[in-house]
Image 1: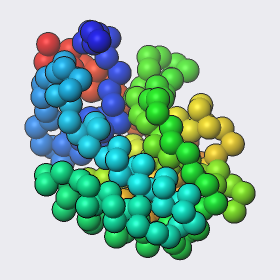
Image 2 (image 1 turned 180 degrees about the vertical axis):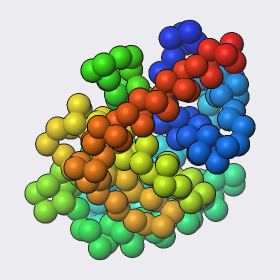
Image 3 (image 1 turned 90 degrees about the horizontal axis):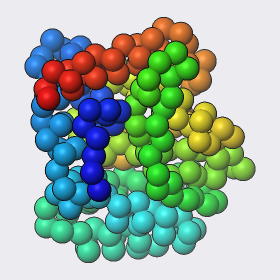
Length: 215
């Protein structure tokens, strides 16, 4: 599949990393993002690294939030991913046992967040939709170890809230910090203020400018 590098909507992962660097006055690496996006699909390993883990989460929930589905995912993981899977499996087993969702489904397609006043802002995937006490919770699963900064949380919450409002309007948007087993519901009153949306819009615009400059 050919990728249009001229008209590119940043992924939430790349935009978050860009915001982290900018807020700390460090060099951004949009040039490396371009190389990653332009690479053949089978070279983008990280994009698929946790799909088996998501399947294990679904199986764990389907087994009544118990059983060995997560342990099996660890045992069947590659040597490169095993340590990461182990950390994630322990935390998610504890979280799911506590939350006790009645069902879960996977969302495959990315959501492109639309800006009413301009271009597309960001592309992201809401990985799983859980049913918690008859309330659907649309969760973005955050896997990296590095602690998120305040600016990253602000960006992510607004982007995810907008995406869920577009694609799963009846669901509560949330972030799951997989390695610590923490569910963070997103407060719409905070995430969707004009100030927050302006911040997302500004970061997306700055990223697009850096993307064009890196061509």
